[in-house]
Image 1 (cartoon, helix red, strand yellow):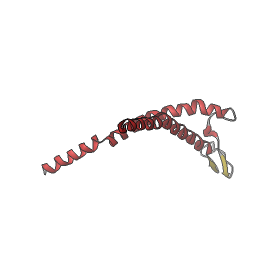
Image 2 (tube, one colour):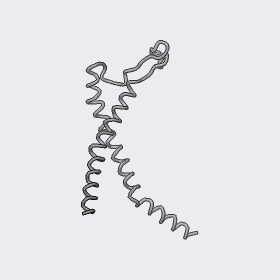
Image 3 (cartoon, helix red, strand yellow):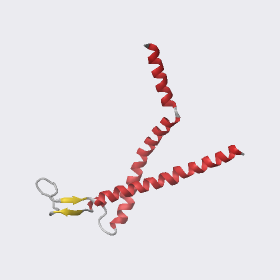
Image 4 (cartoon, helix red, strand yellow):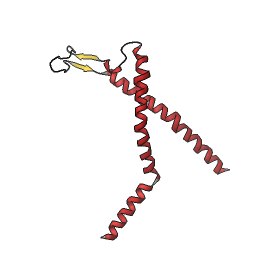
Length: 123
C-alpha cells in the first residue's frame, strides 16, 4: 500500500510541475489583479465618457418591459419587469477592454517572440 501512495504522490508532483499547470496558476493570479485595473478604467474613464450623454453610472440604464417600473419604498423591490441593459453594457465594455489589453500586451508580443525564436532555431 505504501508503494501506491508513493506513486500517487509522485504522479501528483509531476502533474504540478508540468508547465501548463504553473502557467495556468500564474495566469489566474495576473488575471485577478488585472480585473481591478480594468474595473477602475471602466468606472473612472469609460463611464464618465458615457456620462457625457446621460448618467455617469451605466448600471442606471434600464428599460421597463412590463408594468410600471417603480421601486416600492417599503421593500425597495422593483415593481414590473425591468431589463438592466446598462449593467450588461458595462460588463461587455470591461470584457472588451480586458481582451484588447491581453491581446496587445501579452498574446501579440509572445507570438512575435516565438516566431523569432523559431526562425533562429531553423537557421
